[in-house]
Structures are given as structure tokens and as C-alpha cells.
Length: 97
View 1 (tube, one colour):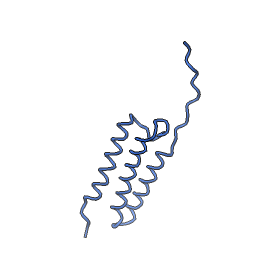
View 2 (cartoon, helix red, strand yellow):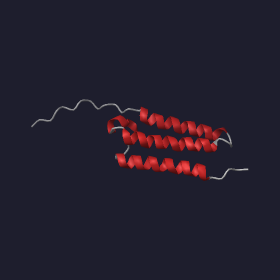
View 3 (cartoon, rainbow, N blue to C red):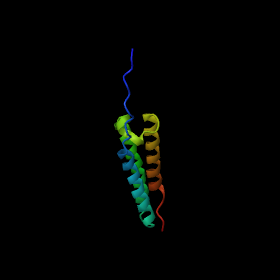
View 4 (cartoon, one colour):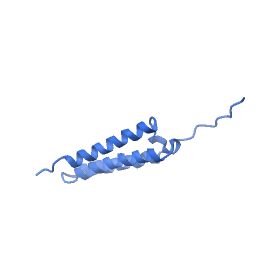
């Protein structure tokens, strides 16, 4: 039995990862702007990681593109845990004077 010829490898789709990276960069920019915006920036970073977890969960392996690192369950768990941790820590820190 002959195997079908495999064509050239398909290029990875960068947009799911770019969405997450753009959110993290936006959150970091907010955090750097001043003492009053660090909490909002941290929440944006955490939310971006949670968006990445949802993207990885709902997109197929091929559509997830560069967001795919390991198995789907591992990627979703790691992004989700990191996102929740960042948001919880940002909200748990008491405000300064």
C-alpha cells in the first residue's frame, strides 16, 4: 500500500500568538506608565494569558499555529493557571498610600 505524498509543510498561523503577545505588551505598557496603573496593567496581562488559554482550547491544533507548544491540555492548563495567578495576585495586593 502506498502512502499519499506529503506536500510542503504548511506555514504556522501567527495570529493567535500575536493576540496574546499584543495583550501582554499593552499590559506591560500600562504597568510602566505610573504607580496608579500597574494593577490594571497586571490584570490586562493575566487576561491576555486567559484569552490564550481559550484560543488554544477552541482552536484546532493547526489553527492554533504558533500558540501550540505541547499537548492541548498542557497548553490550556499552563496558560489558564498563569493567567488566573497574575489576575489574583494583581487584585490581592493591597493598594499603597
